[in-house]
Length: 70
Image (cartoon, rainbow, N blue to C red):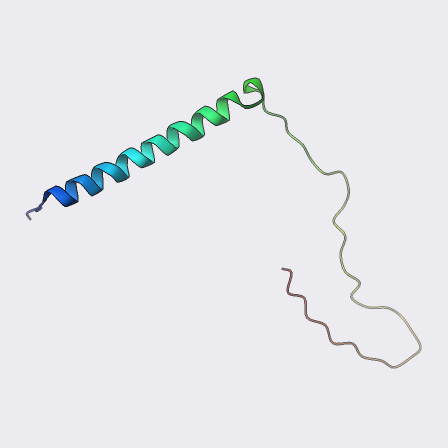
């Protein structure tokens, strides 16, 4: 199996590799220097509010709903 490289392919691969390395370096430096190197863990204490699925009533009614937020 032979690999054929020309100048255009070499430049393309070189630019993409350098870009990925720079992005990892920037992400790593931002992660280490933010907040003095300390991480703060937070959590919500409130419970998740769920929609009302049914209500007990004497009236004979039907409601059609679509939940698209999932």
